[in-house]
Amino acid sequence: METESTRSLEALDGLAPRFAALAEPKRLSILAALGAGERCACDLTGCCGDRQPLLSFHLKKLRDAGLVEARRDGRWMHYSLDRDALEELAGALLDLAAGAVDAPACC
Image 1 (cartoon, rainbow, N blue to C red):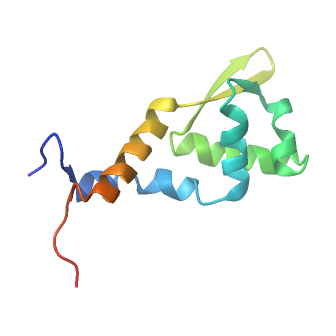
Image 2 (image 1 turned 180 degrees about the horizontal axis):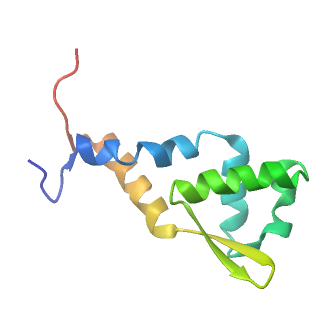
């Protein structure tokens, strides 16, 4: 039973795609660049070695995971962090570290 201070294992399972999206250094670089605020895609190309197709690929992965939001302004795309999603991941990690996850015994 999930209480206010205990997170269920099923709730953590739902976060797995978001954690998987973080398992790529270029995506972490993009997130770090967005930490300062919304940025145009053209300002993020340096995160992927000036390769725009690679940047688009990583931005799509981050958007699909719900970690990044996009906004169109004419022909330009602007990206920003979904801070709520990142805070949810941080909370899950803190719960794991504190032993506040209701999970069955392993093995």
